[in-house]
Image (cartoon, rainbow, N blue to C red; front, side, top):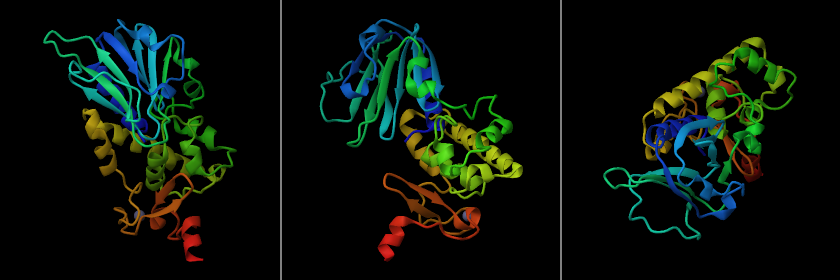
Length: 292
Ligand SMILES: [Zn+2]
C-alpha cells in the first residue's frame, strides 16, 4: 500500500509530467471506485491541470478548480503512459484497470496520460470529482501532516497525552496523523526502539522526543530516496529501504537479532525484539495456535 512517501513522490511526478496539460478525457472503468456523482468525470474534459497536492495518502489534481482526487488503498497504483493514442478503448471488466486519464496530444502527436490500477479482489481504490477537496470525508477527517512545518514535538505530545491506545494503532490512524500506514509505522517504531504495543499515554517526554525524531526522519528519508524515481520504480525502492517491515525471519541490520512478526486477521506487524521489546518476543496468536 502506498503511504505518505510514495504518494508524495507520485505527486511530484505528476507536478512534473501533468501540470500544464489539458485533459482530453477521464474514463472510469471501475464504476464502484467513483464515490461522487456531481460534477461528473466528463466535467474534467478540456480543463488544464494547474496544481497537484497531497492530503495524507490522497492525491489531488486541481484542474482549473475542479479536483480529481484519488486514494490508491491497499492494491492500487498509478501507471504513467507516454502515449495512449493506440491504446484500446476501456471496457468495464475484471481487469486491474480502474481509471484512465487522457491528456491532449503534444506537438509531436503523442497523447500521454495515466492509469489507476488495482490488483486483487478487494476493490477499495476511491476516486472523487469535486469542487472542494474538503468535501471528501477522508480528507476532512485527516490529522496533521507529519511533514508539514506545523508538526512539532509539541503536536505529538498533545496527540499521545491521555491517549490510552497502543502506539502502533495510533500512528496508523489517519484521523490522528495523516499519511502513515502499516509499513512506515513498523519502521518508525524500530527507529524509535519502541514496542508496537506500548500505550501512547505512558510515553515519557524523552520517548516522545525520540518518536517525533523517528517519524520525521523516517518519512523524510523515504521521500528523499524515492524523489525523481519513475512511478514504476517506486514500489521496489520502498521495499529495499525498509528495516523491519516485510522482513520477518531476516537479520535486523542494527543488532543482528531476527526480525519477528505478530499476525492479525487482516494484516501483520514486524519488529525486532532486541531493539524494541527488551529481547522478549511478543505473543502472536497465530503462532500460539499452531503450537497448541
Ligand atoms: Zn535489532
